Image 1 (spheres, one colour):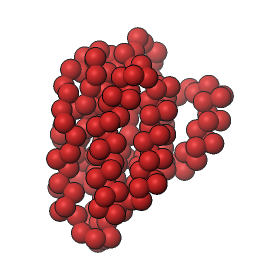
Image 2 (image 1 turned 135 degrees about the horizontal axis):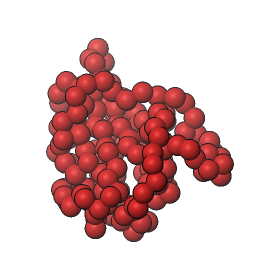
Image 3 (image 1 turned 90 degrees about the vertical axis):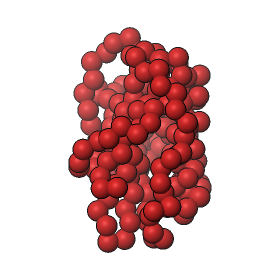
Length: 163
């Protein structure tokens, strides 16, 4: 589990625990697809769900990325931008990731981008959850794929890399 750093100005947010949990149903369906095909373990997928739910509920990340590395191929993946300003009204269905195109041996990983500055107790919790390894997002153009929202809060899923 890795992270990148971003800066964020404070503003009014539409994030609530109930909205995050509703949106995470769709995100977790995406993550479960990765585990079902053996790109990650079901245990790791559940940890990603729990950690992302905590991070989104505490408004400490601005985006996250599920990265796929197929043997001998450049990495590609799904970049999720958090939208908490009330403007996102798209409530798409999960799935449609075209994961069956990836060969056996493909591995999934996750990278998050933390908002900074973080309070000391938030940083301590992040360390306790083992989100301590620096990471990098995939290079390349993002193409909007789907969005998941609840009452103006949600995430926008983008494809990144060669598909």
